[in-house]
Length: 330
Ligand code: NDP
Image 1 (cartoon, rainbow, N blue to C red):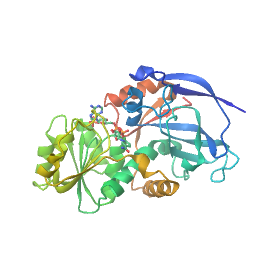
Image 2 (image 1 turned 90 degrees about the vertical axis):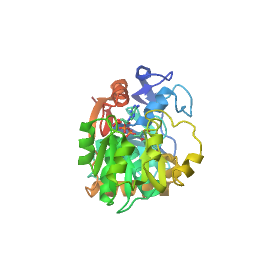
Image 3 (image 1 turned 45 degrees about the horizontal axis):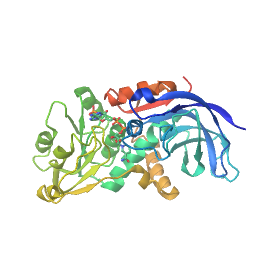
Image 4 (image 1 turned 120 degrees about the horizontal axis):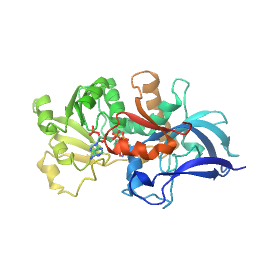
């Protein structure tokens, strides 16, 4: 029995206008698969990279974008025993979440506790598990450490700020307006620098009495790379995890010795949740900090699924804060 549904399809990469809403039918799930009826779908900056073609879709064109969603399980394959029809789940997975329904492997579904809404589930899995691996794996921060986190008022940024506060870290954020800085400070950042009007490296030096940071978490990329290296202590770690302003350009490795024997890593969430055990550890930690109230999931923008293009325009125009979700039922 195939299910009629709708999804966003990209037939050619390009601007937001390439996001087209189409009707389709969903086949039955395979033996280890489930069908999720989305209540909400998470929008992430990585969706922009796939839409523009910066990251090529592994299955080629056409493709349905999106890696994250939450909703109800409405069908399961013959071998699935980890979730049941009617369970509420959230997931991060391969491309294809911009859809009313989708099929995923049961192994990537995480059951949502009653305390976490579908909207929070859709907004937190990719961004929150990213914050978790950045702060616990890429460079594990703890009380007394000083961290610089760029784009602090964004989806990952607002979660990371609260989590760093919970861990006792001095968190310095950067953001593109004074309003965004105020929001970041309400979400755990000790300080926030408006990097549109101030030289963030000079401000970091002032805030740390010249001592600088143990770690810089940088998802902005091209425009912040060089300044970020200047914000690090000797032996500090630069974690590059995104390219919102464009990819970091090729550079001379010798810079790392000149600036104090620095470390650089370029991680991705998918490597950190590659096995079920890794997913359970990462998602479990996230669910714990959210259910305890230490971290809230700010959903600041909601768009109808069919208006995905409008959502992309807002994200790229730096007009969003916190998380943005797409809703199939509006
Ligand atoms: P955000 O909500 O943080 O949106 C991106 C933000 O980047 C903007 O709001 C803007 O904030 C800032 N920015 C700086 N320069 C530019 C520019 N030239 N164009 C557009 N935005 C710019 O997005 P997400 O929370 O979804 O993701 C944050 C980052 O983390 C992204 O770069 C994403 O790719 C990366 N990421 C990486 C993962 C990984 O595993 N490697 C996983 C998840 C996310 P402001 O105006 O304050 O500067």
